[in-house]
Length: 230
Image 1 (cartoon, one colour):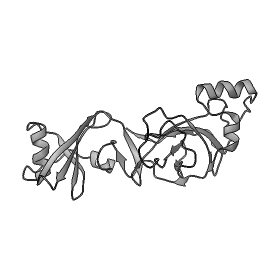
Image 2 (spheres, one colour):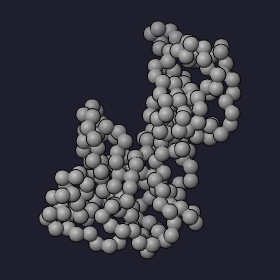
Image 3 (cartoon, rainbow, N blue to C red):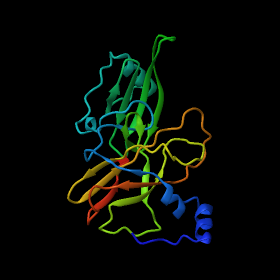
Image 4 (cartoon, rainbow, N blue to C red):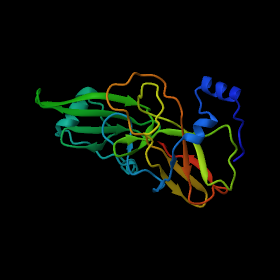
């Protein structure tokens, strides 16, 4: 990689823009990714349960109107449940979907033991599906704009933007081992950030500098952010 400037003026301008400085890059963590399949095993719409994207590969089956979760969905949608399918379910919650990404709509139906029945608690439209691992939705990233990537590089300098609310703080110390899929033409890198515990103020998350060590040079392969599933 070509070396960027690291003078006082450059650092002050970078801080004012909220982007990592060269000093930040020298101090940031170096992560070794783990091998992963090209497509994520689970995805999430940001509301309700995670589900396998493969459930979207087949046409939706008619929902069972005798199912109390389906009845709750039908009541919420005033009977318009044609085209809706079950995406995921456990003992107390069901996630239904209609359409395909990026036009997928979802509805979360939950059981309320106190009321003795099921009810639809939320409905979302056109929210991005993100790869999900251990209940954590993937965070987006881009290459450091201050340097030019070489085909011989084995370390990526990436800026990660955390998806969960973190009080406007960087994700230093919370960036998890990335997933990496490698083939002849692509490097698909998916980043995950462990959420902060407790209540967090809703403020824009700054970019967190992370270096990712590759086993082999980038070569001519295309670098792809695997966070969003389309």
